[in-house]
Length: 116
Image (cartoon, rainbow, N blue to C red; front, top):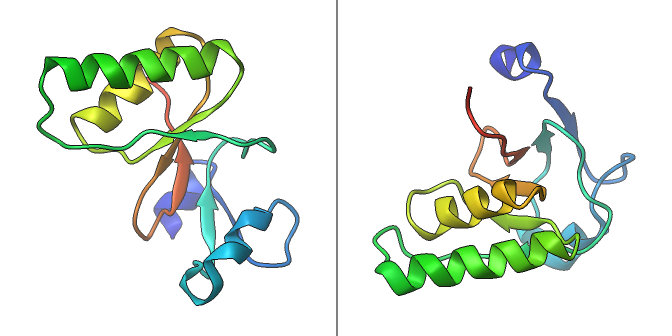
């Protein structure tokens, strides 16, 4: 938790300001807390997920969908794995869009930004 605080992370839970209403759809599978860095979008997002070992057409499909969503102002959500997830995040950033990386604990959610 100290590492999270050092990187401007914050936590939210059910009933707190900023808690995504859609989490209620998960019923008993909803996380008890989200760690967030950046701002959660208040609009829907496009989820793009897939294999870690895609072929060229799979990578291009992920990139194409991500670019199109970004150009329409729709955030792109995916995991942080290599393959389709990475292609989707990279294409979104290249198009000037916002991405959301969904990960397992301890950090359930954070905003993906390119490295230096």
